[in-house]
Length: 235
Image 1 (tube, one colour):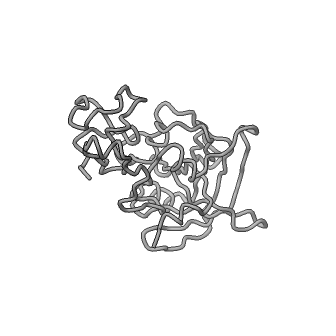
Image 2 (cartoon, rainbow, N blue to C red):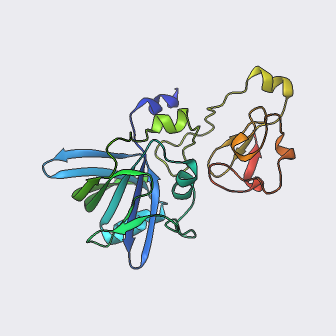
């Protein structure tokens, strides 16, 4: 079975946040959809291991920010590949709080929703929160939303393990003939699934094509999630 067929289902990319008992957190989600018009309700899926899930279950509130197609990977890395248990994801971000004291992240957002959880469905590894929309706004009318297809195909992003679309050993960058001739080993990030390919290098961070993994500087970090070289494994 070709599980990458699931990527052909249409998704967006969203920042989902919640605040309760002086704790707040957020994550990058792709499973958000409208399910009814009257009342206006949306469904938001979150992995049970997400710190944000615990906060949502306490607060019974959440916010969703629709991400722009221009959202940088650094932002996606911050909210998508780190845990709010040990990282202040909101540091340096533009955030405002709703009347229900819920954080709305405006960075890279083209629209946002403030919601109340009215029901929760257990879906195994994930929980599906059915939410009544309390408030909403469009912040940028001329900017297209980020799609999950664009995230994978253009930005070469990988689904983190908590994502509902996580794929085990999914190779988006297949070795080319040039790489086979070079015979340089490809290394994968154990945290986010990013693959360091010596034939491609990491030009955005000053690493030219042809640089083997062993030759990377000691301070080089994963371009997606920011972990160091010790968190990579040879494929």
